[in-house]
Image (cartoon, rainbow, N blue to C red):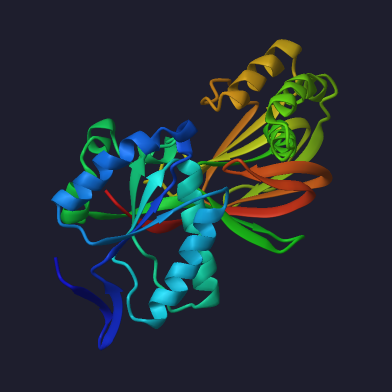
Length: 317
């Protein structure tokens, strides 16, 4: 492995040291038991790295942003960022990279290597197969096989908000339930909060409101649909430039209960949608206040004039 990598002639960009973000609280703290083995894999492969441990939600984002900005000034940008955590930690790391790039446009896309130790590892499972997930991280870093992987993008025009998502973005029922969960998780008494949260879910389903949606793609004219209760954008094929849009309309109580269980346990949806669209660019307009989320991160209640697309980011296979 070369000590330095030059992206442009005469300009030092990437250093031989790797940067490890380790989330010990992912998957209910189980990564604490996995870390000695991960450290052994890195050490046995003679990987030079700097370790930072996350302490609370969104900590990874601020750690990565600060580290990249400071290391750029010293010509010591890491050769890769190694993430030990789940989908949420990967999302935070990417968010920190994007914030650093916004502050300093000269910072390149640093390749990300994933050690899937979270409760939910949908992105790692989709990006790798199970056999590749079992390859130790030291071997992956030495092999240095970098793949440009598709991630979702959104541009919300009303609040001028821009971001990305690894797996999915939703508006409607799932976002309502996630918003409720974030609210109760912020309370001091977790036990009481969980009890109140469980009781509060059923009124959401019973009094579920529906809303109109206008959809436009690069291939079709505007499609207008009424009585929608959930809109979901899926990045379920990381090698495909197309996004999958799923629209669900209100039908019956049994269907809603099934959806509730899917959302609560974060399982894959196995329900035939009322409308499914595959396209590279999708525009959604919703003229009513609805809750939204990206990868489970609450966007709050808002009107929507939003564009979805995909972009590529380098990951180590």
